[in-house]
Amino acid sequence: MVISQQLKKAKTMSEAQIRSLEKQFDERIARDEKIEPKDWMPEKYRKTHIRQMSQHAHSEIVGMLPEGNWITRAPSLRRKVALLAKVQDEAGHGLYLYSATETLGISREEMYEQLHKGKAKYSSIFNYPTITWADMGAIGWLVDGAAIINQVPLCNTSYGPYARAMIRVCKEESFHQRQGFEIMMKLANGTPEQKEMAQDALNRWWWPSLMMLGPTDDVSVHTEQSMKWKLKRKSNDDLRQQFIDQTVPQAELIGLTIPDSDLKWNEERKSYDFGEINWDEFWQVVKGHGPCNKERMKARVGAWEEGTWVRDAAMAHAEKKQQRKNKQAV
Amino acid sequence: MSDKKNWPLWEVFVRSKNGLEHRHCGSLHAADEDMALENARDVYTRRSEGVSIWVVESKHITASNPEHNGELFEPAHDKVYRHPTFYELPDEVKHM
Image (cartoon, rainbow over all chains, first blue to last red):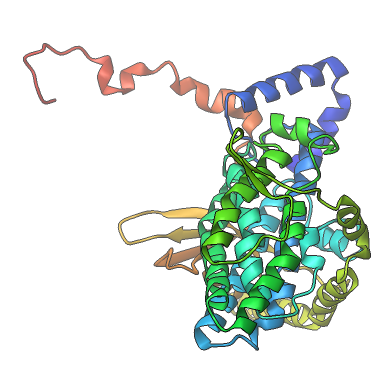
């Protein structure tokens, strides 16, 4: 309601008025003030946030699928409870983020529909298959590791509900990465076959994890505006370098080899130089031609459609209960 | 998509321990109040964040409009005499 009032008002405002409001708005953000749901905001701010936040929520929800694959086959009870808790956290993170996005005036159903119809994106990394148990290790260590690097700066983003959701997400996420690293460490120190399994998972997940941090700065379209709105605090290339510098010593520590022959320490930069990323592969997966795009969407849409009768039954039950209560009150 | 009604939105408030107030921590969808409580338990207290939960359907919350912040909150700005630091005391008075 507030939003439609705002839109109506925006239509009657002159361009000069809007420009002056936008200027005040940008100044508020520059002063590190937070923007809350009912505050005036430029339409572009609202739309960009809906896009990024819903994409983030979708990634959490679709991100449950590759790992859900291994819950029933975890090698021990300890691993199973941890994986189950991690996947449950991801559902929770998706829910925090969907609710936060709803404060911008889009409904949950609209967001689901955008995901299910392929109009909204989710992180491409989840379109790769999880073929061995070591993939659970690689995902926690690398994929969650890269996600944390992406997410920590968002705890300070300008939109209040998003920042608050991210604080909860980041607090919970650090166990995800540790449980993944522990799996990798155990395998790397195990039998030759187990070590090979860990190395194979690292080989397959390393490059997609680097791609996860987004296109290079020279082709990234959203960076400048997103920096101004604090939707982004560091560029994709900086985040990627941070991820590499932090991960390489961890791989060395457990005796695994990063699958990049060009990787080497640059003493001058105090950072690792690394090889060329295959961006064609990245864009292919983004466009829907990754190994599991269709499978993921089929699972997601299937879960939603098969759950329809449960949602309807719960609503019917709630309404009946309410009617009974009303009758007693008369 | 089903033509039945969608689950309404609820706001969730959690008391982290006795002695502290309930604080808003987010929202969720649920068919009724019992489900809202159960979902709130699963979504917002997976790591012992609470000892008590309130849920209220979002439509029952009346919120002030930030565009009216001037008339609502500015009258308090020039009433410095409501604060103890407004009053002058001799240095000899240590605790008051």
